[in-house]
Image 1 (cartoon, helix red, strand yellow):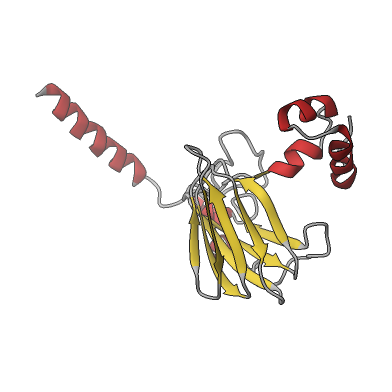
Image 2 (image 1 turned 45 degrees about the vertical axis):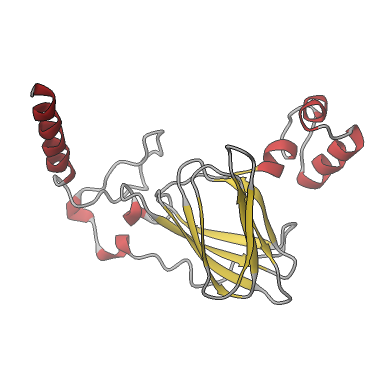
Length: 210
C-alpha cells in the first residue's frame, strides 16, 4: 500500500516541478556546461528567442562530402533549450552524402522536400540494415544512437529537413572519428582490418595524422 502512495506522490511532484516554468530559453552569453546553458531571466526573453530563420537558405555543399547540414540546436536556437526538440536543414548536391554517423542524444525524423535520398540505419542487436530510396514527401525515422546515412540518389540537388528528440542530439561521423584525428594508424589497422596504405590515404583525405 505504501509503494503505490509513494509512486503517486512522486508523479504529482514531478508534474508540479515541470509546471514551475513554461520554458528555459538558453542564455547564450553564459558558459556552455555539461548540463547545458543557464536559463535567461523571463524579463529579458522576447518572441525572437522562439524564432529561428537560419533554415531558409541552402548550406555550402562545396566540400568533400558535397553536403551541408544547418542545425537549429540549443546553442544557436535558444528557444528550444530544455524542450527536448530541435531541427536541421540537409542540403545534398548531386553525388552528396552524409557519411555513416550517429546522434547519441536523440532520435531523428527526416522528411524529403525535393530530390531523391537513399537513407538507412543499422541495428545494434544484429547489424541488420534498413535502407530505402526516399522521394519528395517521404519521412523516415532513425532511432537514437544507431549508425545511419543519407545519400543523394538522384541527378538533381536534394533537400530535406530533420527533427530530433533532443535540443542537443550530438553528432559523431564514423569516418572522421577514425581518420580525422591523431589515432595511430597501427591501431586503426588492427581494429578495422584495413591495410596501412588504405588508412594513410584516408587520413590524408580527412586531415588526420599519426
